[in-house]
Length: 292
Image 1 (cartoon, rainbow, N blue to C red):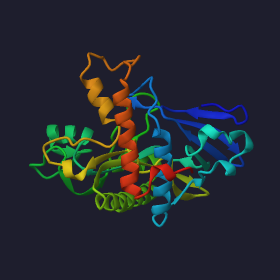
Image 2: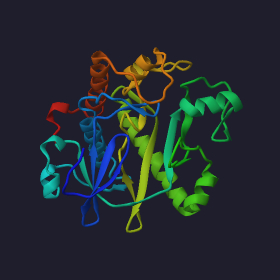
Image 3: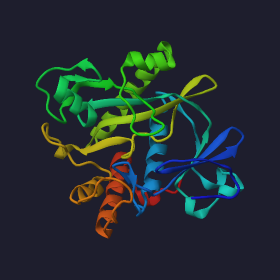
């Protein structure tokens, strides 16, 4: 996605960021999908709009915990060169924030890299956990487990003490408390609608010295969403995101290196449907009504 009228700042696997002037950034969320750190050739219809719509919902719903960088999701509020019809519903005009150098991860269930560490050592991020937990077990209470932000490769799990050394102890304590409150409120809301949020990653930054929530919030890309009726400790529940893509790729003889194999149309459509269903269940709104 490009526009000649705004300076391009950065492109990630999913988002393109432009300088909107006046201390603001324009984030445009594409339909690109990555699996095993490789971007697929086929876009997933509606994905970018789902991520934008869901983040906008959570920014509003969680405003009582912490403010956000979001200014608007409407085309008419953007600089003239960015009022591109194809961008309707997938843009976020945001205040520039000084982003923290850590990822703010909260885990409510034992899965992913945390499960691998526990199964080896009985610990999570180096801290002991009760014995006898299974994969996907609910943790006694949500845990803040920060990580580094890797310029290349994978982020590295770090202790709270290491996070404090990076950003300062007072700020680290604020970030931990805010992240845990965001997760608690968000997971309670989702659970009442049949979705368990196993873990999630928040991005926090500073605007005029105040902490704000940024980037995307409690989406299927930044979180593990599980259908509550499919959760059973000792198993890995299916997730509300790119699970059909992962399942398809896992069955292939592919080395998880670029270029990716082509995705069949039925896998693309099933993945798109997962994203839309997650949005509608979480928000109680019709995705057809979303336009930013």
